[in-house]
Length: 140
Image 1 (cartoon, rainbow, N blue to C red):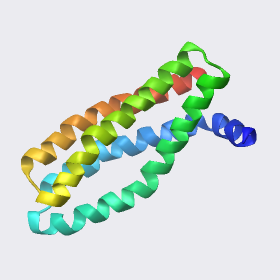
Image 2 (cartoon, rainbow, N blue to C red):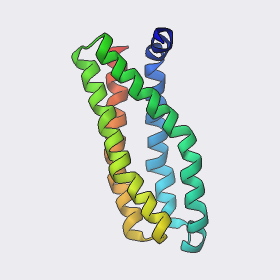
Image 3 (cartoon, rainbow, N blue to C red):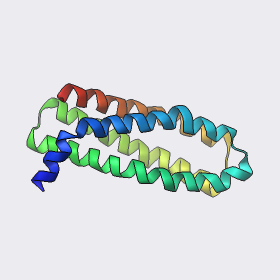
């Protein structure tokens, strides 16, 4: 297990960079495209998008959480704790705000109000994952 944590710690900056790129693409490219997709096509496309993006996002999120938590346990400096707080905040926004928006879009179909809420609230995740990247770079 310690070998895994060591390997993870060595690649923490890469993981944070990947999350930064991924959330940036979602904010700047993917979510704005939601506005353009006609409601009849959105109902088929959106669940497919959610399932496919999960294969990229969830492993990175778990690796980031494991790395942050283990860094707090083994190193425990202020930057480690700040990094963990940013990661936990991103998780909170993801599962308390973004995921329910996506479930509602799947259940009720596309509404401009829900798409705009998703874009607006996703900015918090952009900030959180940008901060994790900065902190990770400072730790590097």
